[in-house]
Image (tube, rainbow, N blue to C red; front, side, top):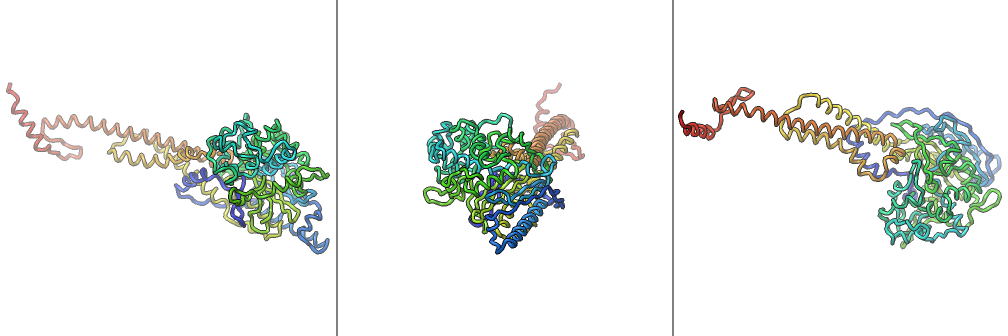
Amino acid sequence: MNVRPGQAGTRTAPRPPRRLLTPLLVLACLLPLARPATASPTGPPESGARSAPAASSATAAFRPDSAPDRSAGLSRRYAELDHYIRDRMKTTRTPGLAYAVVGPDGPEHQRFWGTDGNGRRVGPDTPFLWGSVAKPIAASAVLTLVQDGQLGLEDRVVDHLPGFRFGGRAHAARVTVRHLLQQTSGLPESATFRVTDCLDADCPRPADRLGALDGVEPLGPPGSAYAYSSANYLVLSAVAEAVTGRPFAEQLRRGVFEPAGMDGAIADRTTARERQLPPGYSLLWGRPAAVSDGVDQHGAGYGYIGGNLQDLAAFAALQLRSGQTADGGTVLTPDSVRRARTEGRLQPDGDPTGYGMGWRIGGLDAPLNNALWHTGASPGYSAMIFLLPERDTALVLTQNLYGLLHDDAVMRIGFDAARILAGGQRPSTEDPLASDYHLTIWGLTALALALLLAAARAALLLRRPPSRGSAWRRVVPTALWCLPAALPGTALLLSRYMSPSQLHAWLPDVAIALWVATGAGAATIVLRVVLAIRSARSTRARSTSTSRPQLAAVGRRGTVRTRAGRSNWLPQRVRSVERASTAQTPSS
């Protein structure tokens, strides 16, 4: 997952899928809620803190007048960064975090705080998943294939993947490798969860997932519309595998990891086990819990790359060296670097997209208006990378907390830290935190509890004698109970954005509350319908049993005595008919 570029001069954070969030928020508003009290979180224990000597290229970014001033300026700036990040960790209750300021020669300042999902202190060797920060890395690997002549930017996808039929054969035949890299193939954002986040043991390869895109409606002709979708990079992985004949994770290792010095990088489940990747943290009713575990075996191209802080810093340093290795070798040629960092243009009007080949291009407030950046998240983890080419420096940050409904709060730390590094003012850490998350989870929890009580009450009513009343008195209460009870299940049926397993991976507490509400709602509907049917049958049975004695009483007295003791006189016409019948009967 990733943030989407907004209007120029604004910072935008990752947005949860609207098709999922809308029904959840509607459900959350059904009952009056009390905003949960904000606890006073204790900050995570400080782990090892390291700071390397500043390289001359990075110190030049702050333009001090002398060597002592330069050192003092850097120390103040780094101390400000440390203080802000620590405060922000307490605000968001982030269990563990690592970050580094990087120059062309590697980390210049780095810190490690908190604990990982196994309770161990975060340190230089602690692995994290990086989410969509994988995209600039994957794009670099694809560009190495272009440099080697194995692939062309204008190659049609169908020439390498005949089974690619997104948007119909005519549309698919026009999609190129460039379109995939620049996110202009026409794939909408909603296509992401059709082909991503497979955490099962037998996940299909990228090429075998393409059939799920056949029925997706394109946003427009290839190259005419931009939409950030991880599905583009899943298809790109399949193209690379078709060209090389090997898993894309292997191409990443050969083309990027090894030459860049990313020795601890993760690209599949095997390397995740070897690096002992701990589980990440998701919020469970407002409290971090290490419940997010799993790697998409074939997801390295779009979001399942990871490693320790040194690995991400090594990639940032490679980019600051314009694709050159530390010993002078070449990973990316100047032409490839230029292509990756050039903002895409839509056809036919030439409107900018804010996206290059794997990189976000600008779109942020000054002093980050010229930054190259990317953020990313996978269940339980989030990461970000900011390149400041004018200052010859970069910021990389990883943390082991994420959730779709509180992504603004979690991701803000990277944007604000990069702004401080670029010379901006330190922002406040006191702000409303994750209101969407609290509204949704506590609203759904209240609804689930209410429906559980409703189901229990209906079950108790079944043990009592059936009530009697008119059809109107039976239908209206039953409908009033069943309509709200049906809402959770309806929301699940209408939300095709996520599968149940994906919902549990990204929003575990919301998934639990929604499933409980759905089950309790279904039980409430069944029990209420049974009560209504039983009441109707009881009313009919009593009506039948009382009508016979009443008719007998008519023959004896011509009146019917009600239960209240009042006499109901039969109409005059009925009595006349009875007398006429009696007169015509022959005497014995």
